[in-house]
Image (cartoon, rainbow, N blue to C red; front, side, top):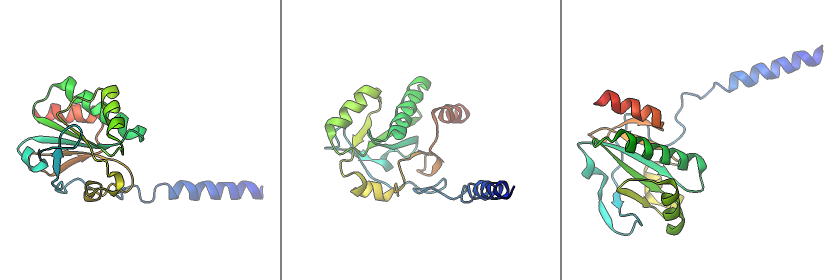
Amino acid sequence: MRHVKWIFVVLLIGSLTSFVGKDKPTGGLNVGDIAPDFQIRSMLGEQPAGKLSDLRGRYVLLSFWASYDAQSRMQNASLSNALRSVGSDSVEMVSVSFDEYPSVFQETVRKDQIATSACFVETGGAASGLYDKYRLKRGFATYLLDADGVIVAKNISAAELSAYLGQAS
């Protein structure tokens, strides 16, 4: 009987501690923050194609991912597919990979059928300035920016994006 009480106490404490910190941000920027500006590059990341601030006036979906991170890769592909299926011209997707090798990035984009004009690789990975600007210390993230560059949603799913675009129309 004594062991049963201790098991109950351990389970109770474990369940209570699982709720602590749920509302705290897990790293990165948060809703309401202004997205830091950066240089958008061509597919291989070699030539500048403009800046993020050049896209002001329309919604921007930022997706930070890497081929070795299955969750971020699946999220990137599903968001790209959601935008393609909605056919919304009011949202521009900027997809940034932190893969070390451009060849891995190119093959992943081909396999995942990522369809966006602003999709590039940042080969510096976690050591890159862009990784630091967006404080991606604990994993990758997606951000939906409004026309003024303010983050209106973080880590949005494809279903949430579709619903959001339906409301914004």
